[in-house]
Image 1 (tube, rainbow, N blue to C red):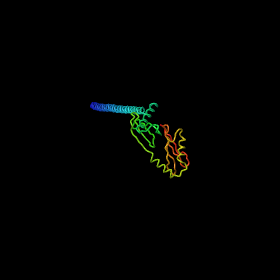
Image 2: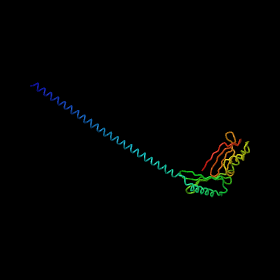
Image 3: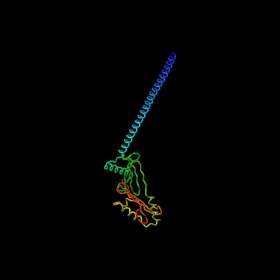
Image 4: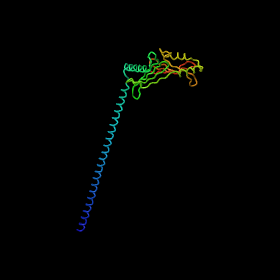
Length: 237
């Protein structure tokens, strides 16, 4: 009987220990599960925040793209060429403004050229012409017709230097021959439309100048020894 009682006590203690261990394990498992759920929730929250951050970044990028596109459209609209008739009328008005300011009749002016340009986003007309051995350059606001700047240059010094070079240079081609060669490239142009001078560069003499006729500028260089055209370029309005 004593043995049975001892065995019963031992069995009870063993069962209690086993039960306690099982509870501890279940508690640990439950805690681990809750911890995992907590980590998962935290991870989901972080991921959700990242998603929102990415979405905000995309929205900002889209807004920036739309702003840049709008600015580009606005700039393109500002630079859109006006109808040819309206632009020609404004250029003619700018020319008359410059001629009146210079005190020059259009019939007495030569080498007339009016071009459009942009200065700090503002459309302007650049007007140039020659009269009485003087070159006039004007910049005029296309919208208001206001004169922005004026530059006047006489040819006296240039002509004197050119005559001195011609007198001292031993060249095979005369100035008149070079003028004829250059004007032969521009149908209708006359000596009123050309500026030319003799220069010494890269070990040889050459005639340099330009022709302005019908709003087109022609720049050229002619070899003073053989009369051949070295360079020729055209710049339209």
